Image (cartoon, rainbow over all chains, first blue to last red; front, side):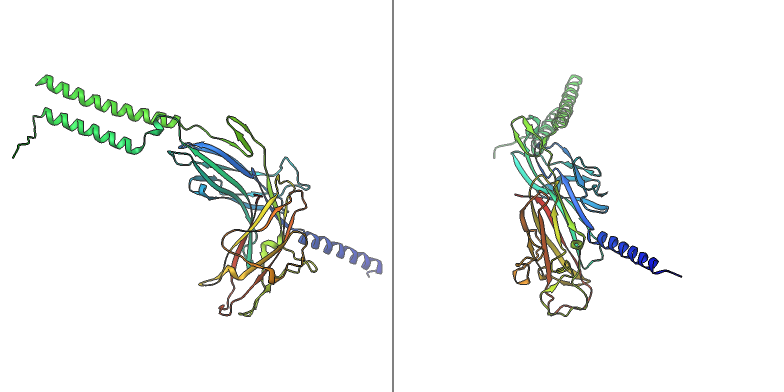
Length: 191
Length: 197
């Protein structure tokens, strides 16, 4: 036998549970953060430069975040690892970050004869469920500007072409002296 | 003759020695010329650099990642509402907030890929958007004011405040071409926040 009071209490807790569930559903969020948000540096041609990129989650549940290089820098940028799973930052969000993860980004631009500027971006991208009709991917982008300058070293001014030509000249000189010692000669006669 | 051979071998070995020496020195100095660069996130003058930690973060409503235009749609129908365009009383449930952790205001961009079902596709240009930074049901948020999504990022809002109050609300519509073959089409779009230019 359930009394009217018990039914009222049951109704109250049912509504409370529904309210909590409803609130948790409507407040679900996905968030992505990146630091630094802008990166500008100078690099000597032929050298490598490593930079740590921090990503964090301003959403309400764990999120897998990928870091992607785009633009001019994509061809010489290596990122490890490919993705990280990041837990949400506790609210209210504040610095220092509590659950951030880092990517190691290695820039290895080619040697250059004159100063060259590359522009690109590093995007930290998260995504929602894969079964939606029109799924959203969300991301934050760090702008990257790299000034690639020639090295001051004498040897940096020696190109592969210089080395090849020098080797050919040395080989020709060697052939000349070896042929000379074996008494083989070439004579040109006037017609 | 003996002396001549000795001279020849001496000469050949000398040349080889110099070639190897040259190669070694070239390799040695090339490796040692790999001097690390220097990075700052703000400014740089001569050999003095100033490094300031910069952050950019945005938070999207969960609905923004799971957009649907419904089922059993009729080809040739225009301005089909995304299901949550009016999910918040009269307002849209699709929004992005620039986090107060951000150290600069943000530009928000959108791009997308075609909706595909096997060999059939609906071009992404058939999906349109409109945004508003003050209201989830702004007067401008109607199909007549909307713009097609493209494959390249386009600003949907610029200079959005990073003080925690900066929100961008947006809506989507689909124009379903009359020749669309029946099927379940799946596509995606990307929303990106970056430091305001």
